[in-house]
Length: 201
Image (tube, rainbow, N blue to C red; front, top):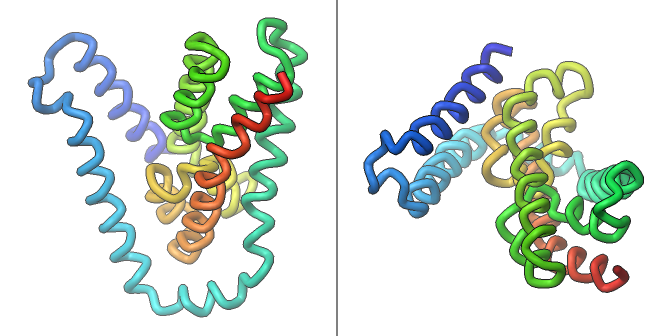
C-alpha cells in the first residue's frame, strides 16, 4: 500500500505543479517523458536479462501464454459493453471500442476521434489513462487479492512498457516476459479491433 501511495503522490504532484505553472518549459517537453520511459525500460531489461531462470520459465509457459491477452480482450470488451447499458450517451459498439484501447490511450483516442468525433475520443483517452493509473496505484492490492497475473491483465497493452516496472516489482521478474508478450499482442490488435468494432455502430 505504501508503494501505491508514493506513486499516486508523485502523479498528483506532477498534475499540481504543471497546472500551477511551477515547472520550467524544458520539463514539459513530451520527448522527456519518452526518454524517461526508455531509461526505465532499459533498467527493467537489465533486471530481466540478469535472471537466468527466466529462460526456463518461458519454456514452461508454452501455449498457455496466449490465454493471457485473450482474457484481457474478453474482459475489456465484455466489461465495457456491460457499462454501456448504464451510460445512455454511449452505445454498445462505442463503449466496446473504448474498451478495445486496452490502456493504449494515445493510439486508441486518435483512431476513435477520427471515426466518431472528438467527444468519444476524449472519453477513450480518459478511460484508458485511468486504466493505466489504476494499474500503477493498485498493483500491490491486485497481486495480493487476484494473483500475479492480475497486474498484467489490468495493465493491458501498457504491460509491455509503462506498467511493466510494477509488474516486475509486485509479480516478480519471471512475469516480465509474459507481460511483454501480452502487451505486444494487445498493442498490435488496437488499430485493428477499434475500427472494426466501430464499423458496426
